[in-house]
Image 1: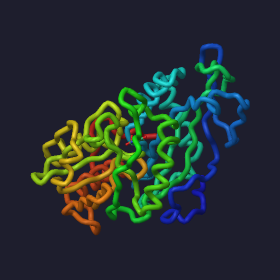
Image 2 (image 1 turned 180 degrees about the horizontal axis):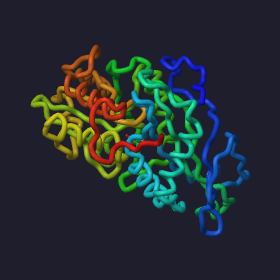
Image 3 (image 1 turned 180 degrees about the vertical axis):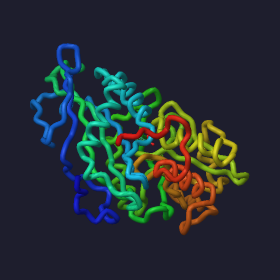
Length: 341
Ligand SMILES: *Cc1c(COP(=O)(O)O)cnc(C)c1O
């Protein structure tokens, strides 16, 4: 084994073709045995359900190298569970959870040379996904599917690392009430791209979406859940059926309660309340927790007291604890760390 010759501290958040990916196909009512392949390309019929009606779901998780050289994943059982549920919602055959975990092990081991070394700040991003390969023309679920996992080494998602970012309240909606907001499906991202390009052009890192029915409650951004800390040091976590159940956010809630002994309030949060909060952060696998310093809603500007220079102290403590658990320097709750090798 020889690590790839990359400048690990400066690899950025980009796709690189690594050595192996996992593929399993569903046909005649069952999944085949699955195997690793070196071919990064997928060949589809022009009328595949993926291409016509966007039958696709995905996951994202990371593998980390620990100081002792072992390679671990953070709570992959929750990714197995979530993609299982996502697939069912998009009328796709769910990939068995035990096989999902086994496939993660296979693909990470096969790409061992691509797993960034301990202390580099980088990790191996793992992308499991499933899509319709079967041909459709009338609108209906396809009759064949493919499940794949590829990996790519990544550095921090935001170049600034833990420097606070600014959000704008979007004039668009991310998810319909009783729609697919809680499902990790590519379709939710396709419709958010226009809003995201506009937010970037206006100088914002992300859009903050409000609830589509009343536009009075906070939902989340395009790819991260939002958390707040109020002036009494309580963690306030927006709750809604159309928020994607982020594994990072669920872990942060546990850490706040059990490691930092903070009070946690998970409830619908009115946008009106946000100006009274002390700290804000975004939770997701890619960026872990990004501190938010400012939220702009047209002419209204909310500046959190934590400011645009540093993360607020509670957000910083949550970030240090969760990244410590992921990197093996803070003891993890039972079952959170899956050792691959
Ligand atoms: C994936 C995703 C998140 C973050 O979930 P994690 O499990 O923490 O990575 C948040 N919001 C949306 C819309 C997502 O797709």
